Image (cartoon, rainbow, N blue to C red):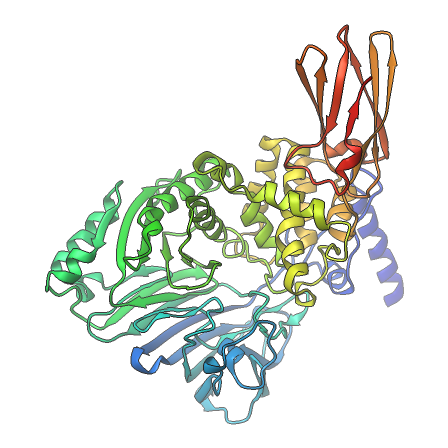
Length: 620
């Protein structure tokens, strides 16, 4: 009986996946089981039995700068919304990345290697837990009493760790009195309908995967220190001196950038703060992070998005980071662009750009980013917009960064590209990525983007997290047209906001919104490792007609962009989207003209091609 049900259901899935044509996407065993259980669909929308667990946090922590210590306690309210009874709890203790003996993909300075996260106490529903297993960056508790469906439990943890000073892997010390804290509290791992518990340890190379929750966190710092973090500051009037508080409130309503704290404030001799505990709240978010300093500048402004919600925008940086004097304004422009051109309203009430890293890369968190200083404006504009774009992916649409990094990185690279061109065209991620694809797509760096990110490292990971899928999204936009592409992205966001989509959920959702079966495209760009290579195969001249045969040598479908130069030096451009390659490997482009053609070239800076030598033809 069971086997008959499976066969019937498989036939139903096959029929529903056929849709517009008889093309289909590969489906893993885990996803197939989720489809059978109706938590997922082949329509790109959550199934009628979709579920998701939640965890909310009430955290109190103290920063001790002289010792580089974080000491904290937390109360977690965890709700089991799954249909399963949970016989274990899995926590991430990310700072064990620095623990002696832990597995790591990235180098850690010897001075930063420590004892790991020290768990002082752990309670579940007021029962002390003394037996648990720590495996690298995970802590696993085997439960004597399972957590039943719909059950809410309370977890209490006290912990501490040493803040890294020299390794700078997403978080750590900027200087002796300035710190950025990410991955700073024990956090319950995701238990989902695809894999069950997320048992991926953090080795430094991959990023994160979280459930939604509400956060309240209190950060105690020494006299004179300030704190900036995810969410909204709840006690500004209590922690700020009157002069600073007045400027803070002015910035909350100002269209201009207000210097809340500057060099003049530090040298005036007047107090900047008047209390040591800073309280923040952030609701319906997947994570929180914060920065601390006693000497950083603080600029702020505000903007109303297309729904008239006010977004408070901050830039926080040391005096020597001169490029950051423009960052508050750039952040404001980015949010305006995303809200009006994506178009989708910015999903959170605040955004802070904190210059808390000495490295070259930025790192995103909900409503706050830890960004580097840059030696050119192009990079400053780029990294600001890129990290803000991450608030859509993966913090509003809760993609699994750990296993499918491209689902946030490629989006955050491709979506701001027009904003970048409008504001500082000296840096263009997409043309840089296309150039790298041209160089490496026909090498061992190019593997199927659907490959789990945990299996990839170094240059192979960057190629497949950022470059190839971002260019793939650009090719998709060219094929659908900008208007329809935006509609597809907006529909995807609206469908999966606050939820955990898989790659197939995205692919199917775009199919539905565009009313096209694009599975042939998804398979070539994301499930296979084909390379891009077009050639001008043949030019046939007959009277006033030129017939240009373009051949697809590589398996990856890319647009055709022809530049035709006539003897009189006039130019004609001809463009065909990648859609022409759905069912053929060569096409003929006719040009009827009374003029003589001198030269035909194929391609442009946005289109990768591994062999440009066959892209130019001179007509004798």
